[in-house]
Image (cartoon, rainbow over all chains, first blue to last red; front, side, top):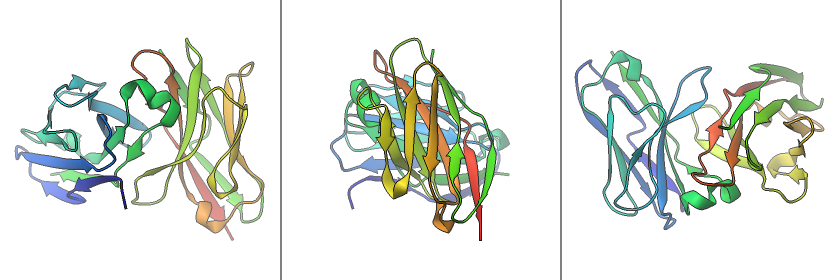
Length: 116
Length: 114
C-alpha cells in the first residue's frame, strides 16, 4: 500500500546514545514533517521540510536534527539522547505545504522511543 | 495563531449509544478543520475534514461533524457507538493561508463498553 513508512517501530536507547529515525513516502509528496506525541499534549511539530532541499524548525526542535535526503526520505536524528526525548515519533507528508489545509497529512505508524 | 481545545480528555459510552466529542477552535483566518483517529499502537488516520464547503461533514465509519462559526466549534458525533470506535481522537486546525501548519488538540480518548 502507498503511504508513509517509518523505521524502526520500537527502540530503546541509553542516555547519550545517538540514533536516526527513518521515514520514506511513496506518494510523490513535496512536504514532510516530524512530530512527537506525548500524553496529554497532542502532537507537536519538531521539524518540517516544505520541499526537497529545505528544512525548518517547528515548535520543539531542540535536541534534534533532520535531513531531507531526497524527495522520498526525511530522517530525524538524535545526537545525544535524553530521557525527555522518550516519546512516540510520527512522520507525515503532504502534497504541498500550501495545500495542507485542503488535504491534511498522511501519517506513518510511528516509532516508539524510550531513553533510559 | 490558531489553536484547538478538546474539552474532554476521556469520554465513556456504551455500545449502541450516541457519541459526542467536543472541539473548539481559534483562528485569525478562515480555518480548515480535521478529525483524526488513532487506534492503539497505530498511526493517525483522517476521519473527516472541513475546508469551507458544506458545514456538515460526513466521514468514515458513520462519523460526522458540524462546523459552527458562531460558536467556533467542530464537534464530532456518531449516532451509535461500536466497540471498534474505541480510540483516541484528535481535532486539528489549519489556517488556509501562508504556512498551513496543522495544529493538534490534546486528544480525547473514547472508551466503549459492552
